[in-house]
Image 1 (cartoon, rainbow over the protein chains, first blue to last red):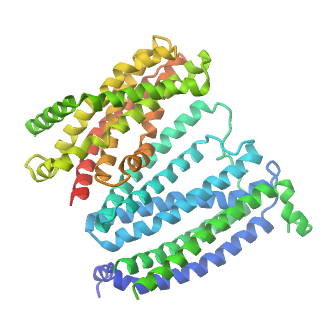
Image 2 (image 1 turned 180 degrees about the horizontal axis):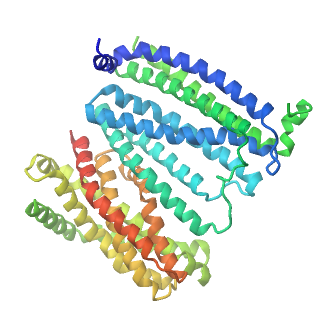
Length: 234
Length: 49
Length: 222
């Protein structure tokens, strides 16, 4: 088969279903392995920070979760756009499958950010540009899920959600820029959760390992969910 | 190795509440999602064999 | 296309003016919400003067959003919307005309009433101009973005609250720069930068929102 035919072959939910299962399993195993390695580095290899003590270890999951929350939104919008443009059911299903995992990581990023902020900067919540943007991102995810849940007709739900996701992804840079501007204006003092301790190689390794672990986990979760959606609809 | 003993490990230099509060909730969130997915898988398998 | 826009605009304005209570309610909401804040945070003049731009902007935002649910609902119910979908005029132009009508009836009056609220908050008189200008530039953007949400949630149960959830995050940049412009002016600095960003948001939303609204209308009515 030529490569273009091969892609369309897998665009059918029926043919994608078994492939998704195999990929999901492989990713789940990989995620567990990488998470174990990442946790080992986070707790047993990375040294205690001079300024923040051991509280900084939260960074390993906070940054990874925040990366995933943003990355997954873009991927979700990508599949939504493909589904809207080419009218492929599976693309729309993928977008719907990604959303809950993205929302989960956004919540984790907010929660860990708050618990990191308390010992470091003295407050659970600071209107830091990134945390505030992350909060709005959570609203965008929840709005997408709420809209799809409110529509009974599956086709309309897919397409309405897709449009919302596209409008959202276009707005995310605008929102981030505006919140950052607002933050610098109002936060004269240098309270910033972006100022992590200077990156030693071990810290970077730990963060990357956790980020990769989260990434593989997200793929596995989304593929399992899309299999559920396929079963529910077909 | 960073820790002299298990006690030190759990204490996290006094920041135990924050570190374990973070890692714990993260693990709980992932576990909740996995559980919810398992439930959805089971339900969809029963509904449409 | 111009005649189609003029026609839809005239029709929507006529319909809105035939039911002045709908229009007046949204404006009254604006005034009430703005009046609630001092009751909640205390009437200390310095504090009120400081929060005035933000409060007025948030109240304007919420009031504008309230009237959005009605934007397409009436036409959808009596079949006019389907006619417009099938008609010769480009749906984007029709959408833009409806948004313009909505803004004239629900957004522009806010610009006029805002100085009265500002008076309540003892905002210094020289800032009124900046406040009015920021609202003048910002409220059409709110109408454009809100219309996308209104089109997406057309006919859905729980529509009003769902619309708010979808649209409020997208309103954030407008709020930040709108209130920010008045804050800058209050600090004695030039608000020109923020106002220019608002103008840019207006141009971009006026250019792209009609397409999104038309697409959303098609999705919602098929």
